[in-house]
Figure 1 (cartoon, rainbow, N blue to C red):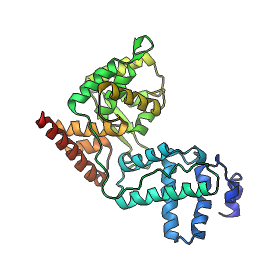
Figure 2 (tube, helix red, strand yellow; figure 1 turned 180 degrees about the horizontal axis):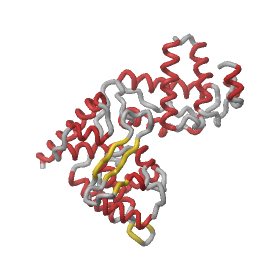
Figure 3 (cartoon, helix red, strand yellow; figure 1 turned 120 degrees about the vertical axis):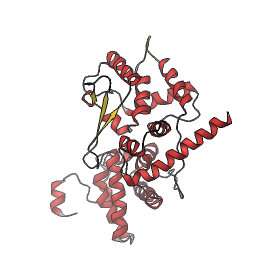
Figure 4 (cartoon, rainbow, N blue to C red; figure 1 turned 90 degrees about the vertical axis):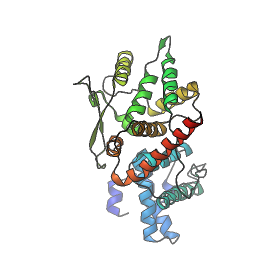
Length: 313
């Protein structure tokens, strides 16, 4: 890093000993690159590793302090990268990104900046990604009933049914759910309400419109009446929404943990089962054609698995 760059960023650590647990991820990357070069890594490898860590910063925030990262956060990043980012990720690329994260946090731990290496438990994987889970039609009904039984104080809580229906019907991602505002719900035609999903500027799709049904509309309006959000639809964190999904699944007896990810797969399977065209499902999920190739194959496998199980009973 040049002297001019250092002048622009006076808090930029100039050597590894200057770093602490509060150092932002972005401020540590140049020093990590220098360490890789000192180990004899090629410039190609250095650029690849730094690019992988910048992708981590894209997901968590580039100013996230390095001491904040946990194993759970890193696993969440890997899930996002593989299933939710909407960009194809080959097995080779996935393996390299796991390696990049592991090498980076091992370096910080070796320097005694971090007391524990959060990347050490990450599993390196070869071969295709394991098939996710998707709810069957009966499990969806069981979850809706379970959500309706959940309470807020002495009153029925409308948020569990709303978030569950929202994810199962629209398949939006966790990041998209967090950004959702009341202005993104178009009720100008109440017979055909529309959810407007706005993407960040780097996405090939800037916006997509998803029509939804009357049951979700009723759940949304009940939620608005109870929680009265002003701008953001959800006033709690996505972590709290994940806890709600987990509780719904446990109450409904679902044999796997409910998540944004498997409810997105559930939407794909339901729409495929209902006869929606592949292009319509792809556009609804906001996926490019290259990434849809792998996603569509997994949706088919999930549906075939469900149909086999239904025949058994």
